[in-house]
Image 1 (tube, rainbow, N blue to C red):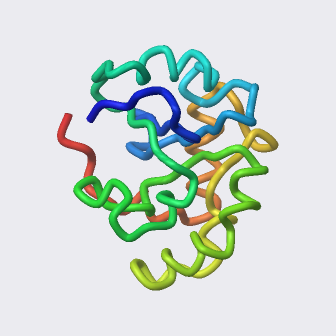
Image 2: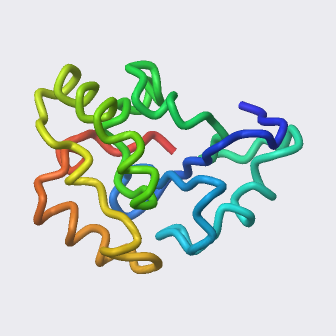
Length: 140
């Protein structure tokens, strides 16, 4: 997939949890991928195709079609708190409909839980019973 660079968000595969990390333009901090939005955008924008990364809009996160071939929104393991709060109602409704999971956004880690340590992320996902832990690994 190519992106021009005007996307609101970027998602990238997080290899330890086999989930995806999403960040947005408004979040200047680090992600568990060890990159900021700007660093991820330099790999994703301008028509560059980088396996494992995708630029997208905020509202697409709660779509039943979001990364559908990879398991859908249930793969989301980390988002900035402000983005989680903004998308909470819609994302929780989608997760309930697709996976039967209530309060899904509470299972998603954010910068208050971890920023750069994948092991901290995995511990949080385990403690909260995140559905990604029951999904098949990505075919990479």
